[in-house]
Image 1 (cartoon, rainbow, N blue to C red):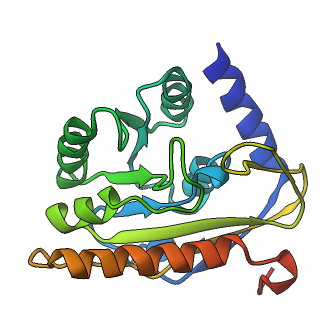
Image 2: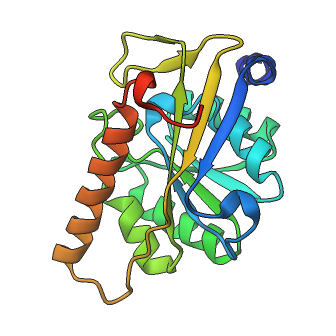
Length: 212
C-alpha cells in the first residue's frame, strides 16, 4: 500500500513539473546501443524513474535496492513503473547482488544504481558500480536532476523533493567505459573522477544551471 501511494504521488508530481534535458550521451536520441549502468545520487531518486520513462521510455531497467524494508517499498514503487529490482547493498548480499546485476545487464537491460546508497555517506561513490562496468563491459551513465525549487529534508542524504510546477533539468552525462584489463589504480581513478563530477553537478546552484 505504501508503494502504491508513493507511486501515485510521483506520477502526479511528475505531471506538474516542467522537464528539460541536457543529453551529452545520446541516450535520449537513441544513439546508445546496448545496456548502460545509470548512476545518480540517492537524494535525487524520487523523480528519476519518471524522468527516465519520459526521455528513454523504450529502455527496460532494473534498480538496485537495499534488502531492508525501505528497499522493499522502493522495489514496489519501481515495479509500478515497469522496472524490476535487485536486492542488495555494499554491506548486505553484495556478492549475490553483483552476480544478479551482471545477469541483468548481460541480458540487455539497463541497471539503475544510487552509488552512495542506501546509507551513505552522501556523495561518496562506492566502488561496486565501477566494478560492475568492468565485469560487464557496459558503460556508466551519470545522471542528475536539478530543480529550480525544492524541499530538502534533514536526512543523511539531504533528500530533495521538487515542488509542484517547478522546472527540472535532467542531465545525462557522457558515457564512461571501463576496460576489462583495468588495474585497481585505474579503477580508483575512474571512481574518483565520477564522484567529483557528480558531486559538482549536485552542488551547482540553479542560477548556474544553463539551458533551462
